[in-house]
Image (tube, rainbow, N blue to C red; front, top):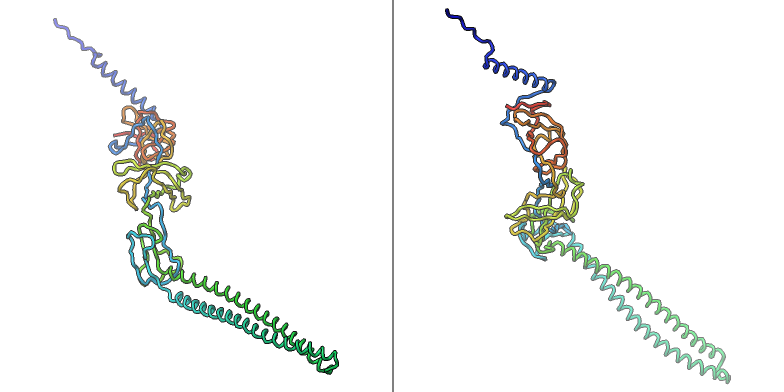
Length: 416
């Protein structure tokens, strides 16, 4: 008689399935417990920018735009005002010192010059007339004194004869007295004449001195006015490139108005605009460089302009070696400005995350790459390529470096 065979309830297959089920339930419970209280967000991994933390040399520099400028620039300012009568050279032309660029006209200045010149000629005539009068007065004095001396000699002779005759009682006392008085009168007249002539001469000399002083000042003023008229012809002060002339024929020009610029082509410098954030770190002799025609050109900061405009300040950099061939005025190049010496550091690539977190935290991927957790970090210096990591990250870890603007403030990102 046949017996029915009873099936076993616990087979190896069922036991295996049970173990796997328990493991899955346990793992799920562990995951749920671990993620309890943490916010999550599902994100598309294809839209992420992921960078690996590395160890390397941190080179602190910034990239700024430099513009090639002449080493020296000369401004053309109008020394005298007037209207433009003729424009001989346009901007962009090469000029030599003394080349005539503009001709100005100023009728008022010309009239003043003519009047002052006429005044000078009148002073010259007055001076010559005064000198001539002085010479004539001297001749008159000599003639007058000669006549007086002759009359004095005659009166003296008469007086001495009458004195002898009066002693011998040959003439009357009245006649003797009259001859004495005539002699003494002529002597007194001579003294007065000499004093009068001396006064006139001194007065003439004073007039001559005053006229000479006035004439000297007039000549000086006339020379200055002549120079002013010469300044109506605007000439190049140095050899160079007339980069611009900002006037046209018929235009009125004021005294001191800038009308153009000449660039000295014997050398160039680099004018660089830098963000005001770095103003305390830029100083004389700071080094920089840029690539040009396949070679690295070195620069050195020569002058720092501390004035900040629109959030930027400017510096002048000069070429450390000879000028690179082919460089031209007005050319713009990216300049690599060195802010510190290279040093070994932990590096994290730059990205949009910094504007969202200020560099205080990032999302770090786990080993599986399916999840990224929020982690606090500390960043140090920055260059256009990397941040210097001071704490919170280790070389080899992977970090999401794109902008976090759409993630809110989630603790965990699930990558799908």
